[in-house]
Image (cartoon, rainbow over all chains, first blue to last red; front, side, top):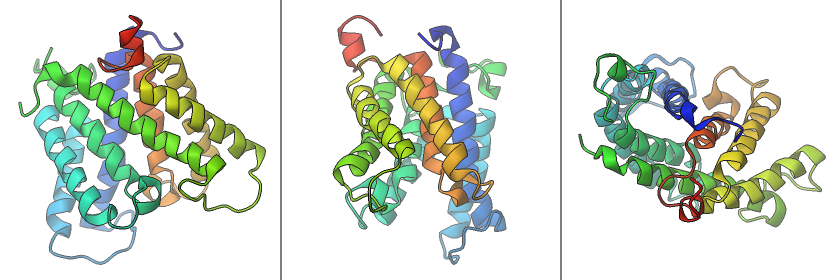
Length: 128
Length: 128
């Protein structure tokens, strides 16, 4: 196999960090306008920005990974069905492909935890 | 914890199925126009190669057959796609259109180490 299976807990952490960092972009956009993706603010901008920046930041660190990933997974499911699904059946066309991938990565992390490189593992809260 | 740790292997398979389906979608779009591909005219060689990996690789990842080597190839293809097609446009994945490509890259890299999980053809044939 090209990648040894012994690397799985590390690859899991790498995936968690990259996915969470990418997720945080949307929070920093909503809270600080950086990077600025446009769009106007409404009542949901602040709570969603806090979830994406704060929740995404903690998942990136791997602290309280499982409960937070569960919340973020739910947030992305709502975003997909509410914002994206009405535009088209296909995720590649309705702009919800990212939301869908985040949803299922976070759902998996909610069960599997943060992997080898995480604050949870450091402080001894690994699930296994 | 909201999601039991024992579900990790099954949710890994759910993540694999969703990511494989969404990846397959891009191959179907390039070759068969389902959903319609935004570019008209014949595909350039790089997109033909990418489409072939998306079509065949996406289908194999979807059913979980030869998951680890196939996911490794799909991860590498996503990395190339990110740096050739998206990274030149902006540093931020959410701005350069490469956000989902980045997610695929790290999801598939993890699958290359971890395999297809409990619900996969690989697990059925005893080669997880």
